[in-house]
Image 1 (cartoon, helix red, strand yellow):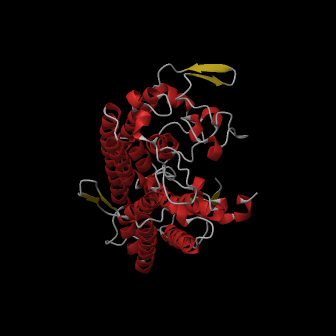
Image 2 (cartoon, one colour):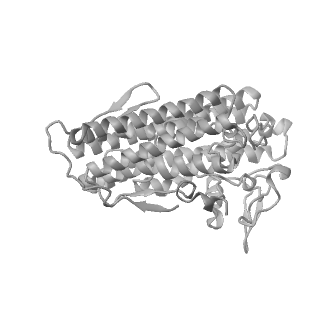
Image 3 (tube, helix red, strand yellow):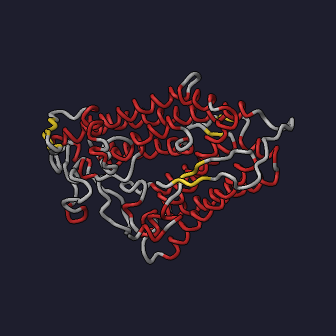
Length: 420
């Protein structure tokens, strides 16, 4: 993904020393405390998902499958709010691919409909390897024996041969196992995997025990990975220490990098504009579950949380403290109002998208070709994110944070390249 630099946007002013302004250290602490709380909530909800998965495996039924799906959706709420931490913090960015990589070539994991999916890919020799059905896999010149699906097996297969679509771990691998393929294109309906895919006594599509094993170990691995990141943001943790060691301006630059990169290149660009340009449901973030509207909503909420220094936990309690907003307001009150208004407008546009999806028009339908109202709704959210990013740029300048690098996206910066 292309990066562009924001050096020299404006004459850069030093951070205000007014009494009303909090110290940068205090702002960095709030940011770290929110990160710790949000990752801890992600871990808590992943453990609830584990409980639901265990119940599904122990007693497969429509009810236990539905409960597992609902637990997966609930687990996405706090996790998506952590994504504003990804781009500015190298420890998070290097780790993120283990838990939230997408899109994935699901044929590597399990059965697919060849009529919809295809039988091969020029880009991925493991496009239909189907580890669940094949306890012996040819990997180039070697053979991987998988008599039992374990954490080590799915970790070895993750991003196999440096192919990014070989995603075998994390939320989206679990999502695929719970929902199965969404064969509806931009029409109504999500994936419709039957609960009997996990029932050895009434097995559909074969390999039900191995499929249950995969689901179990993928969920356990997600928990282990989240435990790692919770520890990284605890007092004395590596990510918290790295932020503080960057110093006042360095730490603030990490914060604004995360806000700007998620707003612009990742969310507005790769996750939204690309799919809208192509009218392609395969570019939908939560493409098996049709939960994309909430993933986008909570990504945007995460940016707002960081700016305002406030996060509402899954138990209803609130973590808050001195914020970037406080710093910006002490330097330029009107700029703080403008950025806050832009964040609120983005949330309003995300709410419009989510309301439409909850009313029956899923995100993949909204980006479908010929759906003028749906396309306009998504485009309005993208436009709001672009306005938000411009205000973040202004905040970067006001705080004197030069040479700050924000993720770009061809879908925004060079749309013609998308169709080549």
